[in-house]
Length: 135
Length: 135
Length: 135
Length: 135
Image (cartoon, rainbow over all chains, first blue to last red):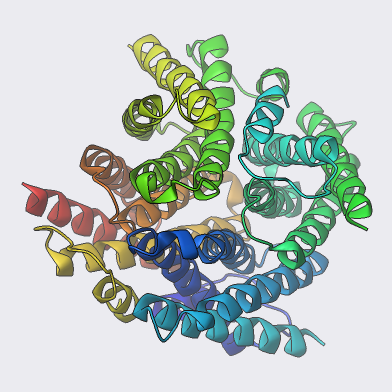
């Protein structure tokens, strides 16, 4: 999260009344979750029981895509695109919940699903926190 | 859209009761809009009046990101991730409307904004149509 | 490809001595291949024989990522980033060859791999053609 | 980097003779650089002198795209796609060098370019280190 905050501090214009800490936390959580879901999909592929993990892989891939685009949208402050910011946060929260719920079901069996479920929960919460702070 | 439909037809399992034509149209519209918005942001950058187009560039970039991830999510049929599908379609519709509204304001001045606004409108409509068909 | 060409024509500055037709063809091929590989990975996931297709899915996912980023880089004309353009074209050609080779091995068994191998070959060729035209 | 390493450790199959630490460092650097370049492009947009920063914005956007796709490719270990891994690392190193060189020119004027140049240099080095370790 350090590098996200460092960049936010360099933004040359006023950031408006956004909660800078919640914003930085959410950006960091999105990129972390995108990477973790990409790795979890791949780890699921490498399991002997891959045939039982296809729904999990699909949710991992969707969540990775949505987190990556959400992290990018949140990294932009120029202009006013708050309606879009809200909509992607809602979508990201939904994708993280869906993937987190799925991964939790395999968490006892597969360590990667356990670690991934935790990343999804953190990102889901970070999106909810940022949404709440937007009022 | 041809290649999107070709791939949909090869899906080995039942597609459920999704409207295959609306799905293919929406996937194609998302990828087209992602490319067009990426190109429009770059064309805006190349304008002498770039300083007046910064909000447009930002909306282009957001729209490109959201359309790309939505097109990828829609390209997947495995498992059931319908809540996420709905949420990304809502976000994509919002991003296309926001970008389309902005580009329309520059359409008379800049041909790229005119072409881009049309791509945004098509994608916004394709998302709305697919959402409506999901019931 | 029509919408790619339409946008290229609206670029407000000189495009330099790039072959506009080969550029448009390559951009279109990249986005088409990204979508097709995303769909092929998902179709592989839905096969009963998914356990035998894990290397194919991985190559599909890599190819989709590389084609998407290459298509975006190629959609930008502002400034001079020709060394990067060349490098991503080389990477994209490699990713398409790797994925095309893999999908071809499953083409008789799985129609999606057949359609996907064709998309990879087209994109591999489009990258090679554009690279050659860059001199 | 912690979460990247955590996921790598959960991979269910042998990672081969890849340098796990260099791999984790490179994945982390790619995602960090993708985020930083996205934010730097946006901060450049917000500068009064945006008209002088258009080449920088373009290189930021290219670098963000290439780093994101490289980070995703590197996050996958399944199958053998080493030729693609090498090619994307070469492209990523090139994109980071190009963007780092550009941002350095504005580093005294713009703090975001200074921070971004550092992220580009770290990622360029991480790609070079991983490439060297691949033999």
